[in-house]
Image 1 (cartoon, rainbow, N blue to C red):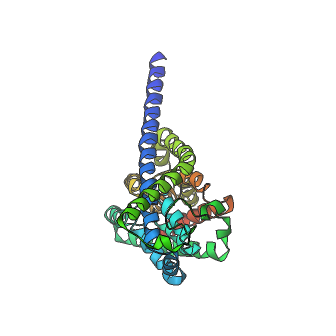
Image 2 (image 1 turned 45 degrees about the horizontal axis):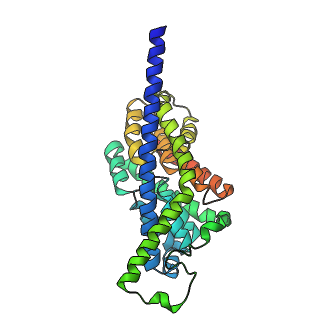
Image 3 (image 1 turned 90 degrees about the horizontal axis):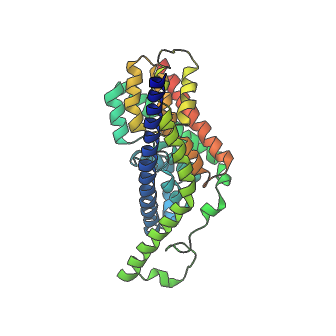
Amino acid sequence: MMYKQQILNQLNSTQLLDALEFFIFTFAELTLLFIVISFVVSLINQMLPPQKIKAVLTGNRGYGIAIGLGAVTPFCSCSTLPMTIGLIRAKAAFGPVMAFLFTSPLLNPFIVGLFWISFGAKTTSIYVFFVGTLAILSGYLLEKFKFDRFIRQDLLTPDCSAPNSNCDSSAESKSDNQAKRSLAWKLLFKSAVKEFISFAPYMAIGVSIGAFLHGYVPQSAFESLANQAIWWLIPTAAIIGVFLYIRASTMIPIAASLAAKGMSMGAIMSLTIAGAGASLPEMIMMKRMFHWPLIFAFILLVFTTACLTGFAIDLI
């Protein structure tokens, strides 16, 4: 009895250490990514006038560019948010911005390559087609039904401490020299740090939940589903995935393991898309950007994308 208790205590200690390690490294990584991405996006917004960005990311062409932009930015579901903020503040069309938010965690050359190696060309092609097509459709529907009204107004307010914030339209800002450019970079960096500080509490809560799930929800919890082959396994896998925090590149080796244990490819794809495309930590961070109707709509669309792709793979 005492021996069993020692084993349980050791397991609990290991789980706690895993959760703490996950929290420290993930929070540090997201902090660095958030500040760097915010700084780079602010720099791009300074160099390119909002009218130019708005013109590029508008209309049918805007969706194609947004999908392409998402495909070349290897962000996770949380680290894609700073760039989304930058696009919103640059007045880019709402539909393409949301298409980018859907696509960025799910499509990039590294992930597509891993899919190709792990599951073959046919499964990869179905995955890419459904993710890209449904990202465009989701963005279109959100724009058509005017979900942009659920963006928080303070997110749309320019930071007047940052250069090119449109708070001051005087001609003096147009005369640049090296000293002013250096000052502008410092102001952009301070603005990025200020943005991070406003997100930090949401990020800490979200990563804490992700750390708990990482430390206390073992892979065996998914492996127990491997022998199931019933129709509700695909939506169940999607629901589980939505509450996890995991990158697609991390999910693919787990998916290969589940496939080897007999889990259907449809359920695996559903779990992968839902797990990488949305997460509970991301929802908490999104609360700083959007009101609940838009957050719920986003999660519903990711869930639908995961289920439709899963059923399509099993049927085809």
